[in-house]
Length: 288
Image (cartoon, rainbow, N blue to C red; front, top):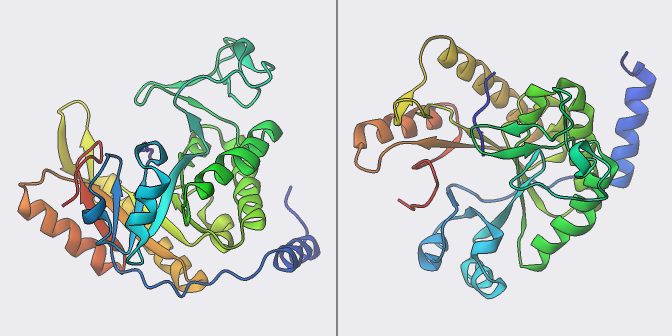
């Protein structure tokens, strides 16, 4: 997860595209009974996790048997999948910058994949056919085989750095829904494209809705000024889309476990918007 700030089709073409989508993809059911959730990137804690309606986990930290155990009482398990970055450089067919995979981006033209200095990850073009094939035919099937009920799609905010890849993200998410019509799909942020992908998802996670981690001061802070105004505007947009499409809006904020006043404020603000909140520390290694 990362914190990012903030010639069209004819009318007939848009109608045709929408009609085609609903012919190929069954209508999404939003009758899920979810009132709480957790995002946990640690290991173990099976009993604690099974107390939530929905959990977002890292697949490599849990075996299929452990996932099955978490799900016994009805907990829905989503497994993490980045579709906008990779943690390490991958070779693929070697037809990209620096001889790495063709899905990497090279905005500065130095013949090497662009890198996030905050997270030490490498930016991906989701419109690349090789990348889309890898997601659709390898990564998602592997997560579902482990027992996942769905996927948590991260790093959509790469589009804010590379606006030209916008359609690539929209197409990929639409293809995920088309190929896996019954899975539960939650995206992390991606507000630049949220209106376009709204018909294909079950939920949006607003990471850092109320607070964020300041890497300079190494402390958790509340949004203020223009940043707060932006978060409020996005919150109102999500409220409208939530009412229109029926998806769930989750919030993930950061605060120290002992800071009860800040945690109470975070919960109150999220619920005021009608969102489902969760609070953790930066690396998501604790469960309240």
